[in-house]
Length: 119
Image 1 (cartoon, rainbow, N blue to C red):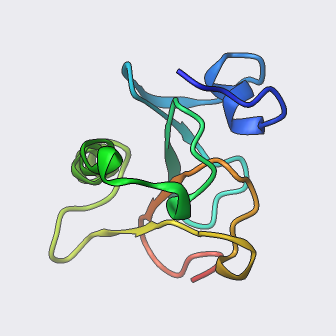
Image 2: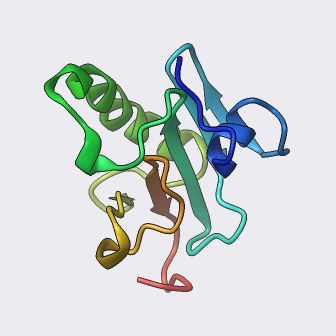
């Protein structure tokens, strides 16, 4: 499993920086955002350091599928109301112009009663 010693998310995954964990398995780590934009706001990140969506290859399809099918389950477990009246937002920022601030692929899951801080 590749890791970047200078990456804040790699340090979180390795337990060097504390986080409020929502999920962990052999491939993924999920944790609450430290500056939430919504009542429910956590991120799912691959344990393997991948800088962004731009670096994904066809070999990563299973990993991304796992993230996208896990997001709804965790959203409900962490306080989002069910579809269609409830719901959540799934966001992946990619690159500087896409608003990516940490260069380790991460999928934001945000939900809960509106209005939200942003969005």
